[in-house]
Image (cartoon, rainbow, N blue to C red; front, side, top):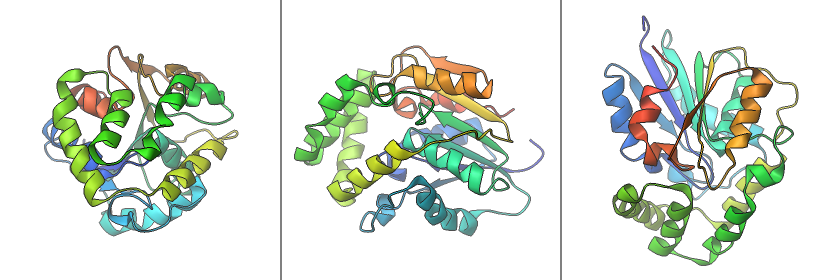
Length: 248
């Protein structure tokens, strides 16, 4: 691209920038001249001791301060977001339409577009009920078992996630606050005014792929589906995600 591309990465529920793991290196290899900035949600990552807002809009206003600190005039700004991060991304486009030039949304869902039992599969809800009562490696293992379909990446990923959980644990209070914000989020009649790439996992066991398909129909966009990956596609298929961001 003529302008320098600057990727801004936003994670999902109770995840932080550390959970991008090897994907950031893969993205850098795919776009050697690009800048990459991962932005933490309030109440997670470097802000894990703070309180997560009760609305997606308030999260955006909080996170935008980090965006403004690292953005550069004249760059091509690309927002990439996964799961809950996709809701944050869309609200960001609605509130500050001039901040980004292109967007990639991965395995996300919106209230008012998909039913609640697609946004969080009933089996996934039952599986996650045990998570708040677990700690350390056992907690992260249970989450990974749900969001990853590729056993070959399990142990290495779990080692990384265990360290994050030990050093910067997201509190139960912030987990519930993020869930509340996600549950009440609605896009209404909003239509994006910039190019959007939709990526999803056909075999996502946490959020139904029908959520991404519904967004594609609503916005009249093509949808790129990975046939074997799970909800966390950047863990299961980092190269595929990097190569399908929608940029030349």
